[in-house]
Amino acid sequence: EVQLVESGGGLVQPGGSLRLSCAASGFTLRWSSMKWVRQAPGKGLEWVSRISVAGATSYTDSVKGRFTISRDNVKNTLYLQMNSLKPEDTAVYYCQLDGDPGSRGQGTQVTVSS
Image 1: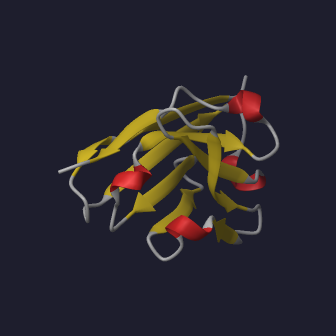
Image 2 (image 1 turned 60 degrees about the vertical axis):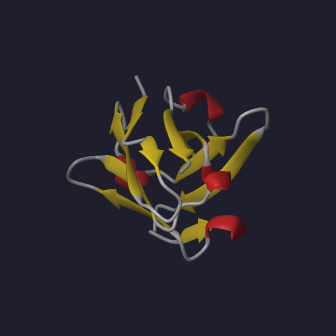
Image 3 (image 1 turned 90 degrees about the vertical axis):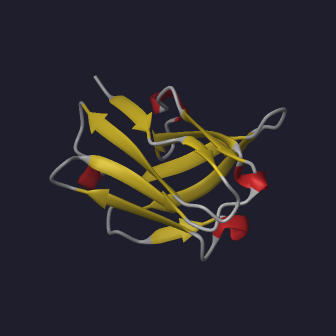
C-alpha cells in the first residue's frame, strides 16, 4: 500500500527557512516521479515542484531560486528545502506521486508570519 507522510512544517518568520520531509512506504521513491503541491487558505491546490525519475527538477515561478526539491533514495524520503519564505507561501503542503492525487498524505502546515 502506498503511503506518504509529510512533516517539517511550522511557524516561521518571513525570510526564514524550513525543510519539509515526505516519508514514503509501499513503493520505491527513486523509481517514481514525485511532486509537492500546496493549498493556501481559501484557495485551490497549487503545484509547487516536481522531481523526475532521472532527477530532473522543476518549480513553479513563484518559488524558483528559493525552494529545492530532493530525495534520499536510502531513506526513501522526499524533501522540500524552503528558503527566503514569504507570507504568501503559507499553505498546507502535500507530497504525492506524479499523476496520482489520491496518493497525497495528510499534509503539513507552513505558516509564514511575523
